[in-house]
Length: 338
Image 1 (tube, rainbow, N blue to C red):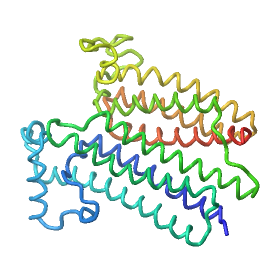
Image 2: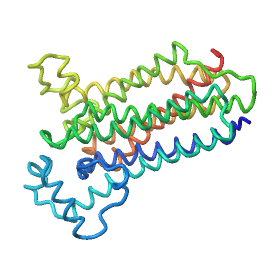
Image 3: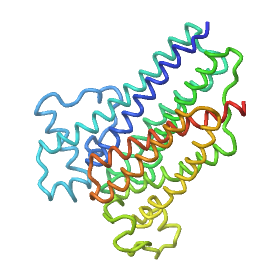
Image 4: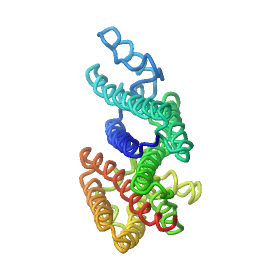
């Protein structure tokens, strides 16, 4: 027998864990902790080093990669400093395992108990597969910084972050669909309209450039706003390899696009929230406005403080809330389309 109520609570709990994962991922990135664990051990890697000999062995592995030999080694990194960055990467990976279990085990239980509506089974399996893929993407990202680079590929970082946000959106959308089903057994799943697809596309571009800004450390190229170092268009954009190459690789240009495309996203979200309010759901409209309003303030503050870590992590956290509230609004409009 289908149990939409229990499924809703489960999916929203997992969505909450994914939100925490995005926050911890931001901390891991900003503390340059992502390369501290140089191996991928899904089972045995669950436990951290438990004695000084194990810590010394892990530190020796880290000393073999370019990040240490070219940056942290010459700076005189101590074992205590290594333990700090190791902690955040370990927490990030451990949380990934927890999320996997928090999704897979209840899914199996609900499946056996026949509590999942038949039409939702393929969607839940797709989310499970996407979650498993995310773990692989995470290691694919880390591996890019273990040999020839002192940092991970910003392309792979973007894939990792955007996949997390897609999973978050999928969990929220599915939970909202199930809420409709709980209220009306004959309810059909909400549809993505042309308008909401356009909003999602605009937001996707903004999140993509945000990930590139993080991966390229582009937030540090200017600490002024609205001008970048006293210029509207930044001085220092390297176009020797072409404008497109600069668009996806140059820290000045990616920063420039991220800060100004934000206003395109704001316009799209204002239009979305107006339609949501016209649909009679004022709370969702307020949530969308609040999320992107706080996000803009945090983005400007992050720039003007030279990427203060608390503000920068908060900026990434609220970005996840912008995604969640946008999904909520799009779902409301999609109910009519259904």
